[in-house]
Image (cartoon, helix red, strand yellow):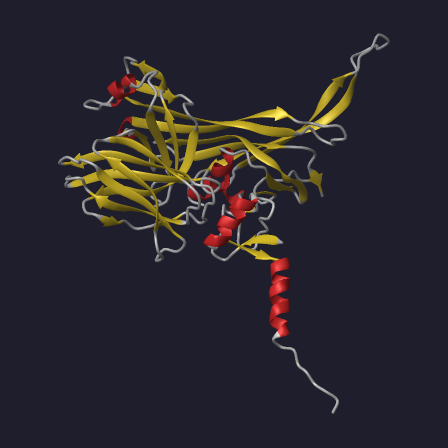
Length: 63
Length: 127
Length: 239
């Protein structure tokens, strides 16, 4: 899971989109995520995509 | 063969900031340490080449913008990327440049000026 | 780029503005370093170790000025806040501040010239770099215009307030430093200065500091007005 700076940034002079996963400790990343300065992308995004696809399941039968 | 003037032939980028317009002198020093190699059979002093040691001295007219480029890092020693282009030849120190001496002087009769010495750690990539 | 005149600078020492007695000011930020070259390295490698900040001022002995006596009172005495500000026509101009003592005071009196007073402040307790967010008179409670630092900070910092004049007397006057992600957004409190006398004050900032910063006076403490300069230093943004 990656953390990147959101459009609320720049944060610490890092522009929006910067990967900050390795720059801050886990607790700080959680705090910054709650404050809206970083967001997670990657695993969490894939799960969100899979959940939204299930709603689009189309069933059809041959008859 | 024509010797080249500096203006227009040198650019300096520090931490992705184009600092050239705020710099009026560039002094890039790449010094090779000389390792003593004189031995009892030598007929003159001998030395072997050691490692290259690089520093960059820059300076110019000061304002809030250029202070924003160099001032914050001068107190933290954060390593940044420095790219120096001299006559079309690019020297790059990727995340290896830090400020060792940053000075701002304001003289009531003149203009406010700045100077910085950057340590360029390791061998720069010349391209 | 237009050069900035040297006169667009200020030197503040606690409640005093010594700009009118100072002919030149120099701020020097140094960084010690150690060799860190390892085997297989292709060039000599170094690591930065510790920073230092030095403020030096050269000026004149001016009739009626307090500078000579104030510098003498602080000679070898810790606890003064000294600030050097540059490009002062810019609202959010840069400032270098340290908590320190006066380390040098040289007076020269050449027969055919002016008397000069040159001094240097010690490295003291470390230096800070910040942005000035206010410089003027506050005569009512409420918020001042905000200044944009250009980036939020994740790791706190420190703010300084130089209280230079009080009309009337202030008892427990309170001025907050507030921050917001946007100029017109909701402002959160970052720290509060509380004072009853002239002088310089510092307040620590913690956690996230948003990019727009302003002062908000919640109490004049009985004073008619005060003259203050506020500087905010945000870690990983201004310092």
